[in-house]
Each structure stands twice: as C-alpha cells, then as structure tokens.
Image 1 (cartoon, one colour):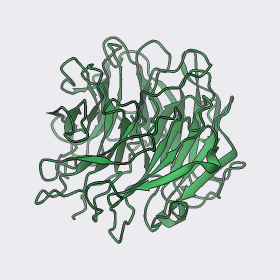
Image 2 (cartoon, one colour):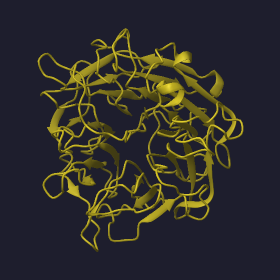
Image 3 (tube, helix red, strand yellow):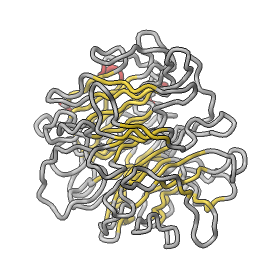
Length: 493
C-alpha cells in the first residue's frame, strides 16, 4: 500500500480514556479531567502504547499496540503487557504494509457494559479498491481485558480514517461517541452493527497533500459547562484564509443535543489573529470552576506567520480557559516554558518543549497536574535525548513551583540518555497502581535505533519518582524491534 506523502513532525495523538468503573479514593474534591481506561473492569487504570511503524509478519509499518494492565497488587515491575495487532486472534482483517495500526488511539465505554473499549486507527488501510480509506478497530473490554473486535471502514479513497481520534458524549444522550476529523460516529455502539449513526466532520484530515502538512490532533471535554462534551482540534492546513503551509488552526466544535456543531476557528479576541494550535493538546478543569480548560503544547518557534504565536525559544505550553461561552480568547492565557521561574532547565532552540502533553493527578491532591514532553532536549552533550517535565496543579490551576524534570539519566530511571532517543515524544498520566496517584508514562520512539521503548515512573505524594520505575521494549513484548517506534503515542480521550 502507498505510504501517505505528507510532512509530519510526529504531533502525537496521545489520548486518555473513559470508563464507568470508578473506585473512590480518599482525597480532596476530585480533579475533573480525562477519565481512566479500565479494560477489564478491576477499577485500576490501564495504558496503551502504540508502535504504528512496527513490522508485523514481515509487513513493514503494519503496526501494533501494547496494552499494560494496571494492578493494585502487582506493582509496575509485575504488570502484564499484551500485544495486539491485526493478526491477533479475534481481531478482524490482517496486518498489511503501511496500515499503521495504532496511528491514533482513543478509549471509552462504547457499548455501556461498564468496561472501557479501545479504538485503534489504521489510516493506511485499503478497502478493496479504496486506497488509504482507513479504518477503526474497536477492541471490546471484558473481564479478561480486550479481546474481540469490530471494524468500521472508511468510505472513500484517501480518507485516512483513524489518523486522528477522540471520544466523548457529543450529543448529551449518555452514550459515548467517537470523532475522527472526517466523521463523527454516534453511540451507542453495537458489537455487530457499529455506531448508531454517523455524521460528517471537517478537520481537513483528508485534505490534499499540498494543503495538509501535519497530522491533526483531537481532544474532548466540556469547555462551556453544559454537560455535553465538545471537541477541540489542531488542524494543520494552508488554504482559504491561510497561506500555503500556514499555521496550525485551533478549531472548536461545540457539542449540542443534535451533536457536534460546525467548527469555529479560534482567534485572539483583541487582535483578531488566529490562535496557533501547536503540536499537541489536552483538556481538563484545571481550576475546578466547572469548565474544561485547553492546554496547548506549542513545541517550536517555527510556527508559521499570521497567528497569535507563542514565541518562546524551545517551545512552551499555553492555557486557554473554558467558560460559559466556550474557549475564552479575551482573557489572559497562562504560559509556561523552560525559562519560566520554577520550571527546570533552560530554553534552547529545538528542545520541542510541548511536543506532547497529558493531564492527571500525580500526587493525589485532587488537582490536575501536567506532563510535558521535550523530546529534543539535549542531556549534557547528548543531543535529542529528551526529557519530561511535570507541572503541579494549584488552587488557580497549573503552577511552576515544585515542577520536576526527568531524563533517562535521572536517579533510578532505567537506561541511559542517548542521541536521538526522543524520550518524551509521547507522555501519559494514569494511575495504574490504584493508589490515587497517576504514574508518569513516557515514550522514546528513537530508543535503540528506532525500535522504541516505554518508561513508567511511580506517582508519589510529591512528584513522580524514578525509584521503582520500569521500562520495556519490543524484546519484553516478543515483537519485532526494527523501526517499530514503540512509544510514539499513547491512548487518550
């Protein structure tokens, strides 16, 4: 199959999960953020890492995903990992070259049985004569974890269905829905029949190659507080109001009782300039005012002309507050970079600080904290080794004091920082030990000459710690290592 010819900077859709099975934790009023993925219904979060470029049965870039099942008793070193791909028993289809199974992941209880399901995008999948129409594979949760699957096929050539994914209840009917950028699949989902209905969506995922120049990113949350989920999208294209290879548009799709409404391109209310979406985003109620806030990972000063850029050397994260009218583009937008007082490190060109972002509660205080990847951070003289920084939540939202950074050279963290590891290309916060504190998962797709690996650091009452942390790669999974890029993405909502 032909590989899609677009320029991409690996802006990862790293998506966090939803499940009806929740175990109460004794703590302050809970942070309102991404719900956990719990595929086997044991009350402990699970995590999925993607290797979309992996070779499967000799098929290059067929792709696989690695599921880590959380446990209260096993600890990080004893947690079970399971590889799933299109040749796995119970998964329809077959692994083919350039399918890129795992290019995007999202999770949620799609059939309402109390266990989380996993949606895996395969944007390079062909359907008969439809080249790169793409597909979604819904892996169903159960008592023993993910098992059987249902496939939703793309409907036209070069649709690339599954290139971008997020899940939420976009019509307020109590059933989770899945947005892909080109379509919205409204629940409830049936294991035999798929979604109840499908509607069109336009984030230019299927734009011509001379227009679409980077992978879109989607995230969901209730920005306007009406109890219906909305979608925010980074849509990198350059036509209509934008020049060729223009900025990464930030688009807001408001949820309603009829489903997602048409996109509204977000602009600075004072200047009229379009907001640059950056490379990644996450959504959650940072200040606990009832509105989901938007965290933007602005990984580079190389964003194009004509937008309200965050012009920070080496990258930054910026917060757009939610409110009753939706995203607040008139109020001040909080920004953090590596020159912000309290944030470890020093801002340097090409650090890519903000390439990946994830929200979760790492210290169990009931407030959302933020993990920020800087995969091209140099560690000493080692170029592009990568780092991850965790910003803690406070009464008014994220704060710089108490921030902490990790590399492969940090105390007790397995491995050694090496050139091109790209540690932090993807990040994920999830409580896989069930103690009320999220573990920090970091992907390094460049590890071992592109084989890739995943790290997990324990959450504590202060910050994640290298003590007791683990890492795993293709060898531990029994998968082909060459060029797999394991850790290029994690599941996300």
